[in-house]
Length: 172
Image (cartoon, rainbow, N blue to C red):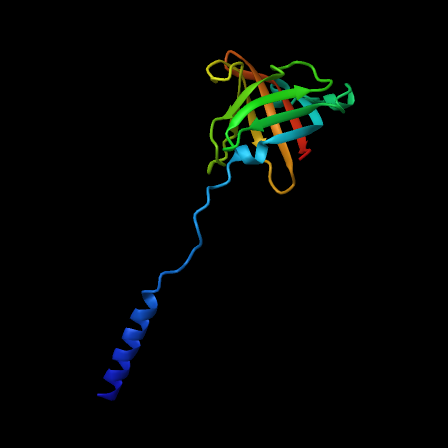
């Protein structure tokens, strides 16, 4: 009889502890890639990759363009509004115009994808974002190391033939 009373007290004690509502803090919006990309970025390295040569194991398939040209003053600025939504972008410095040097931007996905696919950076000529001028691939998302990698792929008939890989570091 005494053991039944003890079991009843233990049961009600555990029941009382299980009813406590845990405080997980207040809700905050998740961090978007827009927040990680916003600001000014300096070019560390620009590499040209011959996709045909790479696919067929022909060397050299890559060339560092940073050593051939004066890219030491090249910067990319990705601007956002007060709500961390993308607005305009601008490329400045001594860089060839392989894509439109200023306009508006947006991402194919505001959050890191669970699969290994790269997020696309869509470049627009208008503020309404109705006329895409180019798409870049965000192949390395900025994180604690404050570096980002962006790739521009050129295709012919749907087959990639050349790409430009921009390695960038944050100026923020």
